Every structure is written in C-alpha cells, then in structure tokens.
Image (cartoon, rainbow, N blue to C red; front, side):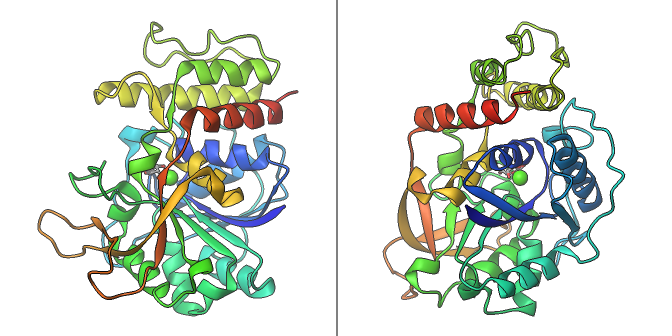
Length: 339
Ligand code: BDR
Ligand code: CA
C-alpha cells in the first residue's frame, strides 16, 4: 500500500476523500493533519477525529495545524460546507485526544523516518506543509510524491474570479511550497489537481444511491432533488448517514449557485491520484502564485512553455475520465461501508 500523510480541511469533499482512502486496500494512512480552511483548524481536527472513529479507525493519529495562514487572517466558508464543515451531518464528538505533535512536525518526522517512501496529499490550504518545509527544506526529496488539490489555470476561480479556495486562503504558503519544489527532480514534482479538472468530477444523487446499494443499504430516499432542503437520510448505516447528510448540503450549495443539483468532488479525485497518478493525464509546468494583485491575489499562474526560464516545478492534471472515476469511487466507498 501507499503510505500517506493526509492534510485536510474537513470539509465535505475532504470527508469523502478520507472515506475513499480508508476503503482502499492500496492506501495506508499514517497520519491525518488538520489545516485551517473550510472551517477553523480546531473544528477540522474535531471532524477528523469523529469521522475516523465512526469509520472504525480510531487508531489513526490526528494532528492539529496552525490556526492561521502564514501572513493573512483566516477566512472560512461555512456557507459552502455547513456550520461545522460537514453540511447537515451531526457527528458524535470523539473522546480521544489529538496527537501531542502538531501537523508540521508530523510531516517532518514521518518523511524523515521513511525517506523516499511517503506520499503527501493536501486537500486544504498549504499552511502546514509550508511550515514543515521551513523546518525541513529537504522534504521535496524525502517525500516520494506530493499531490495537491488546488489552483485554477485555464479556468475561473471559485473564491475570486481568478483564485481557487485552497490557494486563496493562504497564498504565501502555496508560493513557498511551489518555490521549494523548483529544484526538485522530475519524478518528485508535485502533482497538482486544479479546478480545471476537479469541476469535471460531478457527483450526482445517482452516485450516492449506487454507493448505498453497494453498501447493502436500502436505496436512497436519501437524496432526491424534490425533497425539501435539509432532508436527512434515514439509513441505519451511520457512515452512510453522515455522508448523505453532508453531501445533501453540498448539492444544495451547488444548486444555489446555479451549478445544478450536484457537487464537485475535488478532494476525492486528488486522493485517487495519490494512490494512482495514472487517473489523470498531466503536463509539466512552472507554477507560481500571485500575492499582490489588487484583483488577482491567490491566482495560480502556469508557465507551460518555459517563458520564465525556470524549470517545471509541477505536473498539472489536465484530463481524466470522470465516468470511470465515479465507477471506481462508488465501488470502493460502497464496499467499504458494507455492514
Ligand atoms: C477546495 O476548496 C474546499 O472548499 C474544498 O474542500 C476543496 O478542497 C476546492 O476549491
Ligand atoms: Ca478541502
């Protein structure tokens, strides 16, 4: 299995990414780091603990990350992910403690302990990883691979017209991370999974019904577009109930923003790439982050043609087969929740 450091801002799609990894025999989650983003870091950490407990993995370490971005006030987005980050879902709070070490320390200690073996997956702002790189600048070669959900290149942003959420929350961190990989050998370049591709990963009620069927649960009155907003699932399967009540909120958010009764599953797709990069076609590019633009702070810019005269520091995911991906996701997640 692929040994993983997973750094998340759980987050509805982060929660599905975790569920997918937990259900994947080819994944070994070594630690879950909590980054401030969708909700504050302490809430992210509480969500991670409760979700891992519910999914039967109370043994996995959860660390707390920085409460604030490197050089900015924290913004959160409860309107996208719900008051506590998991939509309409209500999780029972965990009684176990957070790890003694913070998230940046966990990145460093784990990468040093297994040089060249561990894949890092970040599906939130890059604050923790940037702090870890300040402690251990050799992380780009100590890690086997880094996969980042973030950015928008030939695509509008989802936070400002030019900026994607994870980068926009902490642009300084993102820039430090891309800079740190500027001298990385080609096989260590971060695999970047931007909105250009993740907005093609459209989860629909049909996918949730198929997950429920695969989990052996009665088919889903859970989610239809006709039900009133906030309709809760009645399944007796606790993990499926949380997933459904979380995803329902995400569907309604996307519908309220004119995108249809569906949800972009950014983070699960990045999680799949962490296990198997061949899920996406990629192109090398030099990526940089705008910090100062009056209208463009947090915008990611890709130089595809070497115009800056700087070596590529990223492989950007540019294409995939969303139908095949959802078949895979449904199969894994549904089987993993079978009771
Ligand atoms: C990213 O922003 C967050 O709200 C999602 O969890 C995802 O990681 C998409 O821009
Ligand atoms: Ca996220």
